[in-house]
Structure formats: C-alpha cells, structure tokens
Image (cartoon, rainbow, N blue to C red; front, side, top):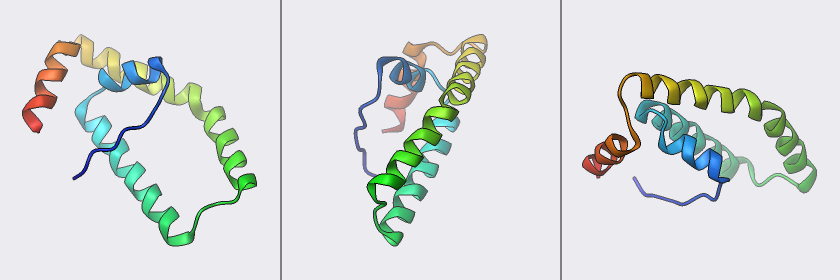
Amino acid sequence: MERIVLEVDSETARKWRTSFYRFRSHLNRLFSKQINELSETGLPDEAEIEQHYDRVQESLPEYRKLLDKAGKEASDNGLTPEKLDEMLSEEE
C-alpha cells in the first residue's frame, strides 16, 4: 500500500485523525474503488464534476455527523489522539 496526501479543511482533518481505524480503512477502500472506477471509465467532464460536487456538499452535514459520532464513541471508549497516533505508528 502506498500513501498519498489529500488537502482538506482543518475540521475534517481533525475528525479524520480522531476517527476509528476501521472507519478510516473503510473510507480508504471506498476511495480506492472510486479512483479505480474513474480510471476505467475516463475522467468526467466539468459539468459532471460540478454535479458531483453539489451532491457531496448536500451530504456533507450527514458525513460530519457520522464523523462526530465515531469520534465521540472513540473518546467514550478511552481513545485519545495520543493513543491513536501510537496505534497508527505501530501499523507502519
């Protein structure tokens, strides 16, 4: 597996760092699937990109709620950013 870097806003980055590893792994698989599908079907035109962006923006509040819920559950179960960093460094 190879690492890539994506630029996101600070709040999204914080929520990503504090989310469960299984949750992040699931999103990584979904992202990989989407990229692979795009490479097979070709890149979308500008109108398709704008439509997709609009759909993403509409679902963003629900996604953020999901991240908040995952973060709260992780915190309630004793996961701290420090523990998460430690677990992530062990996986490498």
